[in-house]
Image (cartoon, rainbow, N blue to C red; front, side, top):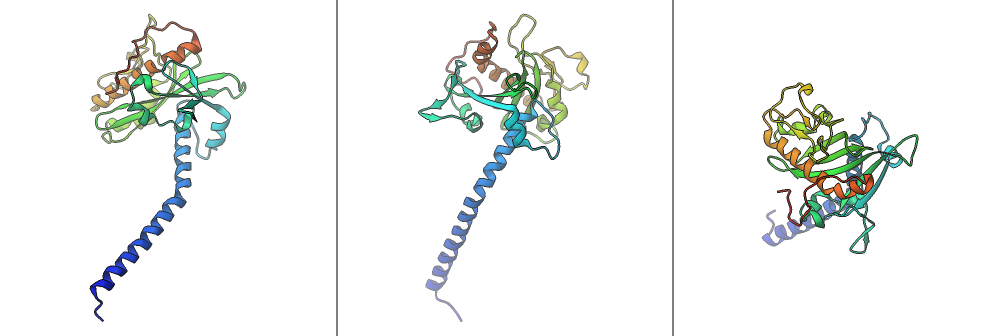
Length: 258
């Protein structure tokens, strides 16, 4: 039997509302699970900068036992609130902060505590964020207790080229940064620089250098700038921890990440 246009339109509208409602309920129901997975992934990346996680590890338990977090401002002072609201390091979006001038941002710090001496910091894990070839890149760089030596690094990306720039997520590339120095022999901050090209011979590089990425020079340059910029931004905090007089560029209000 042929239905009228009014009936068809009404039926379609009701069906659309029902399906829309079901989708909304599903999204609301899945939101806690999604948030839990995002938190777990963040914990894995933070811990991944200082240790090798094994299949089956209880990541939340390890994180709770070994990580203490805080948030600092551009002057290196710890802050507890932003605009009257409590601030938690794990909830700070580095991507959103990246849109602000460096001296207006807040900076999370994650302290990796000794297993045997819970009050002793073994490493400081610092988030980093920047521009790759095609899109944003980010990660964490961990400094040993001397705050001069890299313990480890973890990187991720939004759209680097598979097999080329996307290799910054691979373990073999990230492991190159371990035990490298972030200051040169006169104490100036230089970061750790991925060199142009890729030789496969780590012995030819200096204390502040690592092997590059073949065919991905622009991504490597983005990693270099990202690391240097954020180590610069964290200098006021690192100086408060170490009391060292480190040579560094002035931190102005201009966003130098572009």
